[in-house]
Image (cartoon, rainbow, N blue to C red; front, side, top):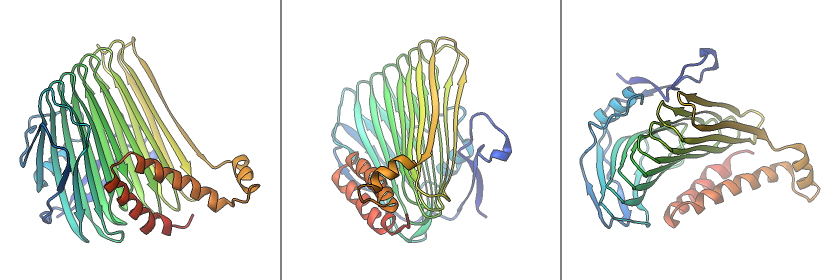
Length: 357
């Protein structure tokens, strides 16, 4: 029997009629198919072990049922420990390629010792027409004065269900950046929860998506401020094509005692189809008076004035939309190493270029 989960739960419930409180998904309970990630990049000053190390690393309020499912089913378990006073600029890449009908569950524990700095990327891909399921949980512990840039690139086939999850505990003067790129899959979910417990702890959460065909994208990002003078940003940017739909929840939560903290949450959505559907839920919770919080969403289509300007120079509406799509692809490629940028190129040619703008 499969497991049915209500994933991506919003921290504070709203009217059920809006259908944004959670995303219900059905996950396989059969064993994972064998898969070993290809590890490349710079692991200098790091220890990589095939085990978990943060099993008692609990952040209250995260999706316990989703975490329990992943912990129980994970066939890939990795602990990446970045040594004290070690700084690695070159990304460490874990690249997984799934086959048609594959099921894979991964659990990564990332521990940054004091004064350490790292850049880690997880890439998941498959053939364009493949089906299957991928779920993961990334648990991050950033100790004093450490920093991490973590990127998840998801390029799975058009009939995959993908669910990427990340949670982070951030201590004094530490910073965690999480960047999700859920480009593939029929149903693509992504969530991140950062707890800023330390003095001047910081986090950045970014999501970039390109909804296409009948893809269903569901995002849930939460930053909770506990320590003084924390700094956070949540930013989601995307395009919606064809009959795609997207729900995004972005929450800034200021707890009592986080005096002097500041947070920003924003979303920018460009609709390149009259049949695409978007739901945005910017949310701010506050139990402290000495804080600064900003949140909002900008959703729109290519306006008539811009279209007229382009058409007056011989660019029709479809070509204009293609320019925006090409620009979004180019920006993502510039954020990644060359081998992963090539994967986006392939995905663009095999999937996005075949979509009807």
